[in-house]
Image 1 (cartoon, rainbow, N blue to C red):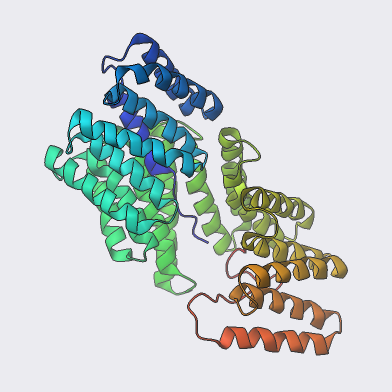
Image 2: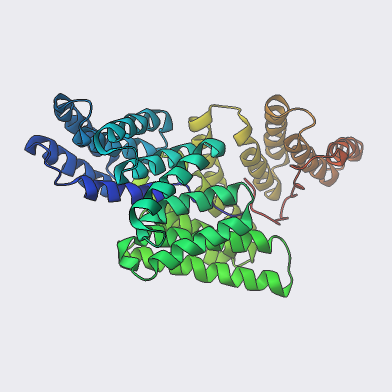
Length: 426
């Protein structure tokens, strides 16, 4: 259920670099395109931002390969690609900027530290955690040496490290790092509201993770804490930056997921809709990063038995998944299962079976015939066959799914049947 952040840290860092780079004595034509690039970036107009930063780079290149002006322009273009999930394009630009800063500013300069953090973020969002960690640590070492261990300038690199620790299941270390960020920034929250919001929502994610599926008093207290942290993070962004900030969508999606988990479906629908509206306004209706909010909204509407609205959302999520990864890839399996569930609940049993069979074929091809994905689809098919008086077929599939589940593994979540919902599907 937890919707983990990936984009916020670099956005804040890029803006810091933009401010630090402004007024460095760039030639007026470079500065004009550079400033226009950031203006378009902040407005979410990435096509315009890309054009302006490319123009700035072309004008900065004659200044020489060791020009900090050129490096700052490369940073900007890298950020544009990063925010569009074009990591293959972003990374070499960031690496080039890093080498320029090392030559122009010195190995242990603030510019190098910020650039190391940017590069770490790019590796982190590609799950290259072992490559990202030493970059965060090196950046922190430089910044602590330059500014001291209590400087707010450490916040962005610390937030990235906390994210990484979370993803590596180092929960105690992650919590300590997020709390360090909050302690650094709450004294002067206006200095970096985005990093403060990031850390607050990160603590919210930790609280939800630690609550798990338990229903005891401790779990409920953690979920209540998470809700308060998400709301505080959104308020920090709205008051410190602007209302409906692009990064608010991620936190709203996490909050909506928490509402879903607690069966607060009306609140979940409202919150998912708001998250999706922000994402559509900033990324465009066809951007693949919308998939999570679309699926969350679809799952919630499904639980409210609003199949007429849930179905087109699932189809939209499937189209985005296929656009990003290609047709009939593993990411489509759970969406097809969800479409099968919707068809089942409408008593469209033929369509339901067709969706499940397509999901099974993909799961067996992409993940293996004895994978958890395959077991999930087999269980859904078996459920359908039981309900349509095909008991022999149902029993065969159940036995096959059970054999898969009984094999020792660490990645085999139990499937949901139609109308079950320990977690949102997808």
